Image (cartoon, rainbow, N blue to C red; front, top):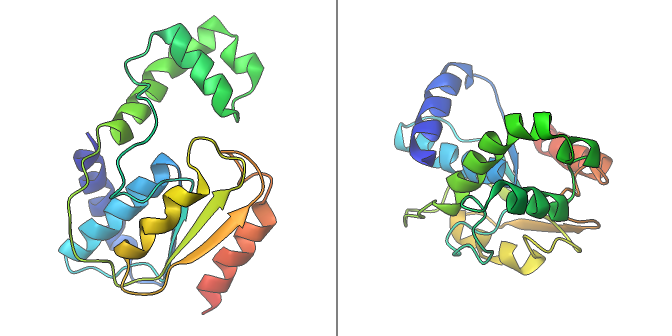
Length: 182
């Protein structure tokens, strides 16, 4: 359940909000960052200078992908393999996968069972990063992020698949630094 995670994270970071900050989240992390912003607002706390969203569909859009958290271990491992980003040495190690499968399954369950609730848009800029070859979060899935901010949403299309951040590290870092300098 995403709600207890968001509540706990929010309470942990509130003491750190005396300086300007930004949030960046990739995939599930993007959803968590978005919901933490909503929770901060609910408690009258400052919002980030900018919220950066990478590889996560607009939260008001239903998940277009098949659910994975109920798959068998072998089916789940195969789907993770198709996502890319996890070394084959890990995926083919029964010992490592015995450790990671419950964590991965729980992560998938967090966003696959997420229920968006309508609320006022955030009063902070949002920038989205998507990748041209991401078959999981297609670039067009990012378009409705504009509904989540009172300010214009910047959209950046990069090359790569779902784990495009590694390949585009410098571009992303430059965007983050620009937001902090402003």
